[in-house]
Each structure stands twice: as structure tokens, then as C-alpha cells.
Amino acid sequence: MKEKEALKKLIDTAAGRIPADVVIKNCKVVNVFSGEITEGDIAISGTQIAGIGEYEGEQVIDAQGRYAAPGFIDSHIHIESSYVSPEEIGRLLVPHGGTTIMADPHEIVNVCGIQGLDYMMEAAKRTVLDIKYELPSCVPATPFEHAGAVIDAPEMEEPITREGIAGMGEFMNFPGVIAADDGTLEKLLVAKRAGKFIDGHGPGIVGKDLNAYAAAGILGDHECSTVEEMKERLDRGMYILLRQGSACHNLSTLIKGMTPMNSRRCLLCSDDRQPKTILHEGHLDNHLRICVEEGVEPITAIRMATLNAAECFGLKDRGAIAPGYRADIVLLDDLKAFHVNRVLAAGELVAEEGNYLPEIDFYDISSVKGSVIVKDFSSDKLKMHLKSNQVNVIGILPGGVVTEKTTAEIQLDDQGEFVRDPEVDIVKVAVVERHQGTGNVACGFLKGYGIKEGAVALSIAHDSHNIIVVGVSDEEMEFAVNSLIAQEGGIVLVKDGKVIESMPMPIAGLMSDQSGEWVDEKLTAIHEKAYAELGICGDVEPVMTLCFMSLAVIPEVKLTDMGLFDVTTFSFIPVEIESK
Image (cartoon, rainbow, N blue to C red; front, side, top):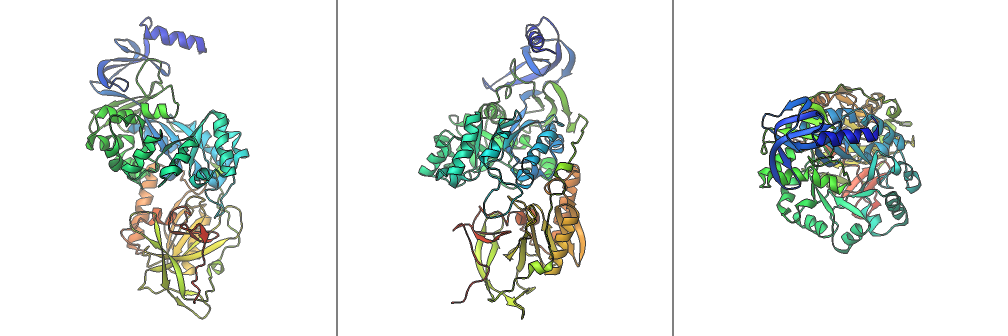
């Protein structure tokens, strides 16, 4: 339909001259502008809301007295962290009221470069969930490991202008921003020249450093962990994205810092949301439940998930139920449990009582398959030839991804190789480069993981996603890595030279091409066998903990394919401690 004809139809519908395409009757409309709830019909013309009042329509949806709220907007999420494809994340999130997500695909772009972004954008066209992508700002995430791509300012010039790119993704290189590093300035200017926003990631920044970060044009931050950090950012005009993900739970803490005066600058986000969390707890409907449980007024909470996010990211066509707005509407049974009855996206009924209604047509994944490229790997690469039995060790701290730098005395054989003591919780860990065929393998020691049998290997190792493997012997570790290569990435658990559980992730070695339910079942089986058969500590999440042991921006010490890295000094350190 031509643009003018569509506009005329919308106006005629709003004026009541012609029937609406769809009319939702008998509903209580949540008005996020006024904070009021009004009773009336919602008339829809094409993809837009025509009006609220008394209307007739070609198709009638009887809300039966339910609340009608705007479609929910997740202000920051990584699809890859769900371990499923963009089409599948849409199937999982939409029945929970999610109609728009702000997605930063920096995981897959670190593996596959712009080709990974191309795949994500094409796959997003196959779901009714409106996926607004942000161009990753940090590829590679650090210079201390090998990634699958390098994307500097010149390579950003074209993709930042794409219609499907809403802005620049979380700027994790906050030291570069604060120092006004030349390469960082060039990246910031790419976004500014294109008129696109720049999302933030600034844990622990305070004072003048925070002033510098905000002055650079950073829009918001999802890394607040205290009310004090939240207030400091709000005072400087930044938006706060209150996070409740599968790994990080900051919402209940931060909501205590929200006031009637600052609530309009507060949004809701997931950051990461695994299928288990979605299937058992929900999505932003779960965030809303927590907000209300913490004493937030229901309409204020809904506004955080809708209008606030829309205004933050310049999405002028959504975030409210009002004439001319996109017809993203969630019908809720109540404003306490926030049970989602039905969901409309762009005027189309797309979910009912937990069921995603559209058929799914998955985009071809061949462009992002075959991403596990390992050169000349064998157990010989795991030999360390140590001269000292005094070593630096990565110490796992329960409940998070921060580690401690500790030391230990280990046993060595006459070749200088590590001899594991079953009574001591220290094992070998290795990172195997899997992007450029460098043949790089770096080894270190891990304490606190608790593995007593076999080995675990992953191709998910933030943020460059090389292979990380931990095990009780070189032979078990070698078998785990080779098994992982054979299945094109994902997760492998081995014991006594056999694969006891695995989850292939052929999409860049980061995502499964199966359903969310399948991924949930696999992860459950992986966790059960990791604890029961491999003896991993019960207070350690076996997959998520391991995949962060190579992230060289979180203290105190991590392992990349280039060696053992001390995050507190931003320098590589030897595994061996030289005797004085």
C-alpha cells in the first residue's frame, strides 16, 4: 500500500470513518504518559495504533477486562549468550511480551567479523521480534588475545550507516575513552558522524574519569552494581540499564536507588538470558514482577520496560499505546504477576498463552559454520617444560567471574611436567587459538574448579572465544579439544577417553541451531554430569565459570591464547615463579 494511502487509512480509522483492521475490546489501557489506566477499545490500522475509545473492526480481539500495555523493550542483550539463533530467541521472548530488543552481537563479530553481523541481521528478518542491532565497538575486545577479526574505525564506516543498526554497542574499552586514545576517538566519531548513539560499559568508573566517559557521549551503563554508582551516572545525565540476567542479578539492589524524580532515566535489561531462565522465569515480565515486589508502582515499572527505553534509544514509533504508535501491545492478566495472555507485534497477533504463533523459517547458517580453525593441535602443545615447582595460579572465587591471583607448589616429573595430586584442587587449564590457525596454545593452572575426572572443553571463552579446556590429564584434555573441533564448537565433557555429554554449537561455535528447549535439556544434562561424573565443585557453575577464565579485562588473573595475564597490571606474567 502506498505511503499516502496508508496514512489516509490510519486517519480515517482514527476518526471512526472506517472500521479498524483489528480492534481490541474490553481492555484496561495502561497509559505510560499520564500514569493512568483507562477503559476502552484499541483500534489498529495496519501496523499502527489508530485510536483509543469506541471502535469497530474487521477483526475483534476480546481482552476480557485484561490490561493492555505497550510491548516490552529489552534495552541490552546479547543473543549469543542465549546459545540459540536470532529466530529462536524471538520464539522464546515474544510470548513473554518482548517485542523489541537492543542487541549487541559482539560475540559473533569477534569470531566472524562483519560476516557474523550480516548473518545476525538476515536471521533477524525471520522473527517478529524487532531486533535492533548495535555495531560492536570492541573487536577484538582486548589486544591480549587472538580474535577472529579486527574492526577499527575505517571498517565501521559502512555498517554503522545501515538501517538495521541503531547505534554503537557497549564501549567496553573505557580506559581508551578516558585516556582519549586516538583509535578510540576515531571509533566514537564514526558513531557521532552517523548520528547514532553509543552504549556504555563502565564498571567502577568514578569522579573525573566518569565525567570523561560521559563527556564522550556514552548514553547509558548496565554495569552498575551499587546504588552509589547508579546515582553518580544519573547525575551526569546517563541512563541506567537495570540488569537481571542469567548470570548477573542487579535489579533488586539498584531499584532501591530509583526515585520518582529519576525513574524516567531507568530502563530494564537482561544482558544475558539463557533458555533455562526464559523458560522457567520469563523475560521482562520477570523483571516487572521483581520491580513490583520491591515496591515500585506497576505503571512506573511498565514505563521502564517501554517508554523509557524507546526514548533513550530514539525509537520514536513505539513504547506507548497512543495514536500513531506502532501496534506492539501486551495483554496482561494483572499488574502483579504480569502473566502475559496475548502479544501483538506491529498489529499482528503473534503469541497466545505462551505459544509463539508464526511459523519459523530459519536463515542458512553456512556463512558462520566452520569457525573452529585449529592448527597442529596435539597433547604435545600442552607440555609446559617447567623448571620451577612454584607457580602462579588462577583462583576461582565462588559466585562470580572475578578470580584471585594466588601461588602454589606443585609436583613435577623429571621432564618438568605437571603431576596432578588428586588430593589438591589444582588442575591444568589451556586456551587454544581457534580463529587464525596460529597454533597458539597457552597453559596455566586453575584452582577451585574441583574437577576430579576427565576434561571440559568450550569454544565459548569471552570475549574472543578461543577454545578453553580444563582437565585432569593432557590425554583427556587433548581428546576433549579434538572432540570439540569435530562437532564444530560448543561444549564437550569427556571421561576416560569418551564423550559423556556434549552440545554442538555450529553457529560460530557460539550458538546451537536447535530449539531453546533442546538447549535447556542439554545444559541441564551437562551440569548434572559435570557435578556427578567429573566431580566439579557444587558451588561452581561449570560452563559459565570456565568461559570467563580467559576474559582479560576482569581481575585479577586470566589465561588467553597468548599467556597468563595479570589484569591488575595489564601485563603478561610467567606461570613459573622464579626462585630468588
